Amino acid sequence: MSVPLRQQIRVGGYVVKQKLRGNKRYPLVLMLEPLFRCNLACPGCGKIDYPEPILNRRLSVQECIDAAEECGAPVVSIPGGEPLIHKEMDTIVNELLKRKFYVYLCTNALLLRKKLHLFTPSPYLTFSIHLDGLKEDHDRAVDQKGVFDTAVAAIKEARDKGFRVNVNATLFNNAEAPKVAEFMDYVSTLGVEGVTVSPGYAYERAPDQEHFLNREQTKNLFRDLFRLGKGKKWGFSQSSLFLDFLAGNQEYYCTPWSNPTRNIFGWQRPCYLLNEGYAKSYKELMEETEWASYGTGNYEKCANCMVHCGYEGTAVEDAIRNPLKALWVRMRGVKTEGPMAPEIPLENQRRAEYAFEKLVSEFDAAEKAKKANGQGGSPSAQGAAAAKAAGNGVDAEREARQVG
Ligand code: SF4
Image 1 (cartoon, helix red, strand yellow):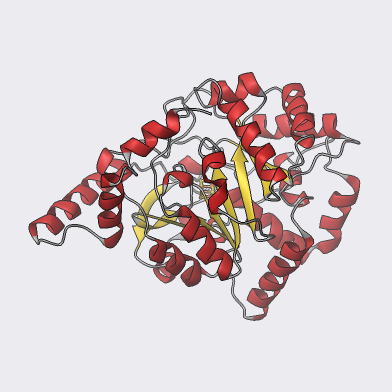
Image 2 (tube, helix red, strand yellow; image 1 turned 90 degrees about the vertical axis):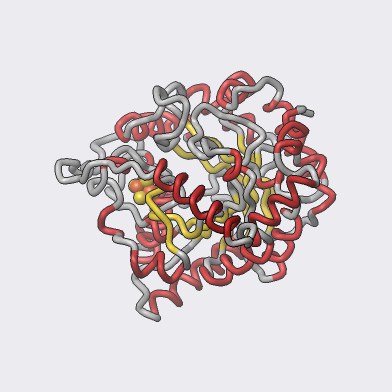
């Protein structure tokens, strides 16, 4: 696997410490979403369907540092939106690196070459670049021609300059195993550390609702893919047991607290994918979220989810408890034949609830109340307003749309 040994040892030590302290729920990766604004509009993404005032908001540098320190997870993943639109992203990353967090900056790479000089190569920093397939498939997935070529050029430049680079790929039900295998072969030639591959989550706000995988399709697709990969040196940035889970060999239950999410609204309940409300602090998120209400088998919106932000933590926990099992899968490869592990029954799952409109109108009301009180919004709102005035909002989006 392609996670550096130093990072594996640090994360392993951290998990052991949590166990010794008797912590049943602990975070492994903080999902730090400093903005929702993106310079692409991918049909399978449910993250950017917000009104302009929300898209123009940013987390401040201090809010990002506070979130990382409050949470304490050894790894900080920065998705979005497109993080490189944030004018202070280099400062956020550098401050996190100073504090020895492992940072994964997830980007579509449209702005990466332009901004690379703002960053310094470090074993703690990885650019995780979005590629959903080879040229034709990726440009279709992001609904814009030329993005694949731009991303590959950015990967090459970042590698030449000594940066660690990872590729993150999301698969939908139009993915064909031989084409994904071809993509994996190609990515292996780019000198990247590895690939994070995940089935797309069925976002309720995504424009394209037709192409999400169900769990059976996911398992069969990954079995087909891993069969094609036997004997090849594909590097995955995920644990061997999580890959085994994707291929239907593990009956895992979601542990959403392992990847808590902080964004402009607060600490998102229950995970990066679902937006069911917010806690004001990390402590409140952990202590007051009704965790048993979420996960496959518990909640309709979780029925088809097999995404790493819910299940990689479960796989890591399993590896710590059963190291020989993890070693066996690592040495022998993922099983691609024979019966699959039992599927989680869905009969007792609770019905979906829809909180999006309420959340947006509450945000709106809070902003109006602040204006009426002469407060002019939170520090991050003020920062975003200032940044927008300086060209960091819609103007930056326009600029970023100029591919290449
Ligand atoms: S199964 Fe877990 S990770 Fe997936 S949407 Fe539900 S709570 Fe989130």
